[in-house]
Image (cartoon, rainbow, N blue to C red; front, side, top):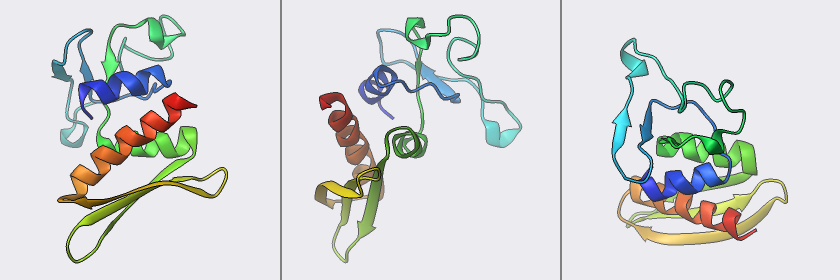
Length: 130
């Protein structure tokens, strides 16, 4: 995810180990390791379970992949992002799984990645407005 989205996710309580993080107050992405090539995954501030219990005091910002952010939004906040393809474009919807309710829809994305990126940003915006 981009820097602004990662900052917003942190403000919403995102505390999941990732293989990348942003340095404080800039958009420099630091990649720690590739877990798919025998590497390891660490989280910001060494471990969210050690040092300060409130990771918000940590200056580092976890940088989840879009898939990791989407999964966290679904598991932590009951917001489901659905993306489908029609013959001419990608479309997406956001659902509240707790209330079994449709929240918002979007159309005319050129790629799956554009749709997912936009819907994650919109889901974050919805949560911040609550």
